[in-house]
Amino acid sequence: MKSAVRLMTAGLLLGVPALSAAEVTWKTALVQPVEWYATTPARTLADSVLLYQTPSGGWPKNTDFSDPPTDEFLEDVRMDHRDATIDNNATTTPLRYLARVLSAANDERTRAAFERGFDYLLAAQYENGGWPQYYPLREGYYTRITYNDNAMVNVLEFLRDAARGEPPYSFVNADRRARAAAAVAKGIDCILRTQVRDAEGRLTAWCAQHDETTLAPAWARNFEPPSLSGGESVGITRFLVAIEQPSPEVRTAVEGAIAWFEKVKITGLRYEGFKDAEGKKDRRVVPDPAAPPLWARFYELGTDRPLFMGRDKAVHYALAEIERERRAGYSYYTTNARTLLDSHYPRWRKRLEKADALAAKTAEKAKRSASKP
Image (cartoon, rainbow, N blue to C red; front, side):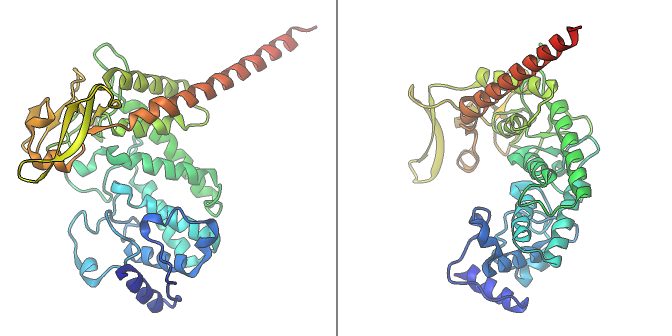
């Protein structure tokens, strides 16, 4: 009840009626019925979100925005705590929420906050089309073009939706919609230019982060090496297959990524959690012919071997060889590509085949008409 109590306090301070007993948490704030966003609890939650907005216009990560900030929070200037970022769904999720509230009932203060956040995302984009993890820029790997945890894809999806001007973004003005569309186009170009080619020139996948100048795969933390990502590349490919009218370059990029996912999938192993002899949590892979396909989080550049690194930055080719703390605290395998291969990609192929057949039929009809005397 702490969040509810503090939200009621914030509501009273801001002149907003208190929350009802039926509390909506931040985790469920984007999945409520449309009519809920016009209610007092929705408005009170929006007021709390506004309290967390940084001077630059973005929002911090790993924050329960339904729990209004304490004085201690506001005074804590540690990076990762109060700085604006696109990491871990920060900034884009608050903006999506505020859009729902504004779509239900316009409010000048909330709209101004939304527009500041919107402009923050546009300002943070590099000229090459990528986005850094933090903006304003912070020294270190935070300046890299960040696909990690779908950070850049989340921004592109938000801007794509806003550019269309459909609910809940109908209130976004034409200028911002046009700027968003231009930013998405630049972002797609960056995705195409950062897709890694193998030694034979074939398109493969992406690293979780790329150098903002050279566009090459780049380091993040010690256990996140330059590599091909079996995780983040899924989100990138899913974004590409959602493009309504993909260019030939986008089509080629998708086909290259799909072929790579098929090539590097791991069968016959099950990734599981367990407790060791001391009762501590751990993870391992065990033989299992019936297990669904796995993909490694990191694949070595040039060899496509699954790659494992702990905090010591040493290269290993088996999960069991790195420290337990990392094995238990970080996901080195994923199954996310399975849905991409089994569902998203086949639907994409079917849609394009239908569109291509229609285009060919239309072209042939036009050709016959032009040949008539």
